[in-house]
Image (cartoon, rainbow, N blue to C red; front, side, top):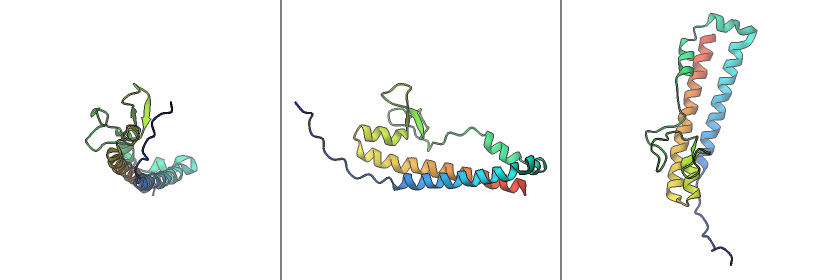
Length: 140
């Protein structure tokens, strides 16, 4: 006997996640350029620069993640990029809020999770951008 036919899932708008990914790519590119500039000539520019703020920002423990709430059913997991799966033990799930909602066919939760996760990633992109600017300023 064949399995029961499933209904077609509704349209999910992944544009916020696509946009957030592009923001992360741009910010990381800016950071990479600033780091290359700082490391040029054997790091001579770094030796002169005051890097206190850059080092503090890099040393700060951050989870690209949180908005104050955790994953569904596990509020103690605040990381929105990867986290142990709800039903997989310690196996990591990427974009767990979105992925697990889709796997469980909870479409409204998936749609909301896309927006929340995108906000988290945009915030991380802004943070990386700020560090890149601080590093670039420290080398001037």
